[in-house]
Length: 402
Image (cartoon, rainbow, N blue to C red; front, top):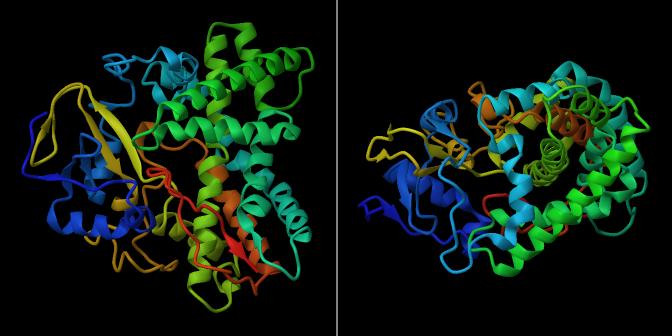
């Protein structure tokens, strides 16, 4: 692609940008909501209306119909295990495969199904708070934000919670593949994690097949064994996606939300006094500091972005975190306002690939944060938290509180 006047250079690993991408987004909203991000080598869209529309536009999709991009020196042979899992993922498929896979898992994640998990989430939150230190600082991410979504998704799927440490290690290694300018070491680590994750699930699925239970994995195994709707590879990929996505973003968002709420000062319980207030506060936290900032699509046909027309095969980056702060869509977008009447964030995406786990993530945050601030209303930040160098996943390195 030739250089364009709207080309912008911004190192996504620059420390200032990592800690505050919103200043860059504000500049782009003023200059051009559609711009070419030189470091990524693709066009980006930051305006709310256009991002929302493109998420629903069927001329764009997740599948790379032109094959995996090759490293000109080494190719992707060293990523065979990672690519094998990714290629069967619901997230990377388009209809009709996407429709078939999503239908199989959707029932477990609709709002009325996840609502029955509220007591379990509340009990987990209380257990974890009981174990928090009383008179010293501690990191809220591993002690509270991580165990709740990880335990819930393991129990929902039917995977041993006792393997949580392994699951976390594998998930983190695979997610590092989306960090810009990744190293060969990162790729090798992700491939090893993919191989280990796949081997663990293969063995566990075989054991589960003979010891069925009332969980999602048993339901998926039954589908595989009684028809041709789900292949073995798709079963593995689906389980990996649900386990990774079922906790990774929620951990980031829980940490971001706690930081945001504590930054407001005063009694945090005012944001969670009723279920309605809790839901509104979580929704505003999702808008204000989202856990996922970039979602890419391939153009399947020519798509007019305004200043440029995408050609088939080109990628476009939809900047969710920027769209959520668009001043043309939100009043005072830089302010945390749970009572805002223009709430319409795109943190879970939209259209065909709207996050299947959104109802569960919302419930986990509403319930866990309500319990946390009810039990610990005097929680204070020990030091200004710092975000991890992991754009486009946007989460904290740690969250030290006392």
